[in-house]
Amino acid sequence: MSTLGGRAAVVGIGATEFSKDSGRSELALAAEAVRAALADAGLAPGDVDGLVTFTMDTSPEIAVAQATGIGELSFFSRVHYGGGAACATLQQAALAVAAGVAEVVVCYRAFNERSGRRFGAGVRQREPSAEGVALGWGLPFGLLTPASWAAMHARRYLHAHGLAPEVLGHVAVTARRHAAVNPAAYFHGRPITLAEHAASRWIAEPLRLLDCCQETDGGQAIVVTGLDRARALRHPPAVITAAAQGAGRAQEQMTGFYRGELTGLPEMAVVARQLWRDGGLRPSDVDVAILYDHFTPYVLMQLEEFGFCARGEGADLVAAGTLPLNTHGGQLGEAYLHGMNGIAEAVRQLRGTSVNQVPGAARVLVTAGSGVPTSGVLLGADG
Image 1 (cartoon, rainbow, N blue to C red):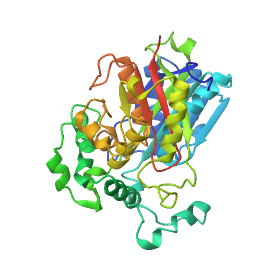
Image 2: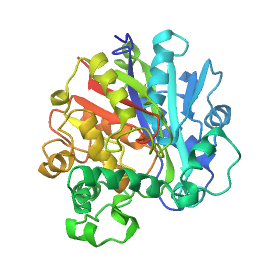
Image 3: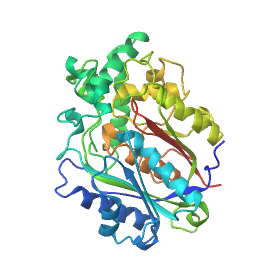
């Protein structure tokens, strides 16, 4: 059993505006988010001695430190695999704090993903690499974009369980309903119906436009420190109860079409086993689930991998609304920040400040990217 749980907590969250054209550099976005998170925690830049981000982030830790007035760093780290890194940044921060190599660690992610490099545009020029070899099995057949890769899994999932593409609409409608009352969400004031989902254009069958997350310019930062120090700060701490990373056998990055059954997410199963074991919880103990929703079918598969329902029953669970899900609007409705904004929403739920607050929320599950090596975290109220 992990000894990490309960030794560190999230004490600050900060974000930029979520837009389609930020008009400023990615470093400026990162610095703005970090400053906002520190202000939220009631800490100063000089208190920070650790920084964690994604390998895909273009703003180096030392550049962010200079831009925000952070001084010496005793810990800096990066996590690979795109959105799969989100919750792992918290794990890295918590490990550093628990090991005593840093006292205050800020996790951040910032990009101009709409006005700059658009991930949804898929593969263009790429240097030769082992990862490129794996992609090469599908590229000649037109599998060039993340949506096309996800569509392969979605098609098999729907076929295996005798479901129609319309069931995916429950995820999209739920996200947009929550985003509609979230002033920070790009789709604030714009809910959708199941009929509108079913009428949206095909992107890569069986995925429609409203099954795909948006593209966002923005930044998000999270501040982590030891639990004792956290208790003396401005907000009630969001305790890191458990954190985990996971990669399945024969894992690839969204193109693992040759590793057996395509109806599940083996990497999420690895994460789920660790979180339930280390956190001492079961699915029924979770008050809110913040699940990575870059594509709607992966939300259903995650619900099943974590044991919230049986295989093929994810859509029914979402439709029933018994499990509060992506209460900020998710990446489908609020913003696509590689999952970091989901961590912030989990913290708001524990503080009691979410715009879609779940009464008495005390245990929140957050997941990171699916279809790729990934991560997850259980956050809990203190005490």
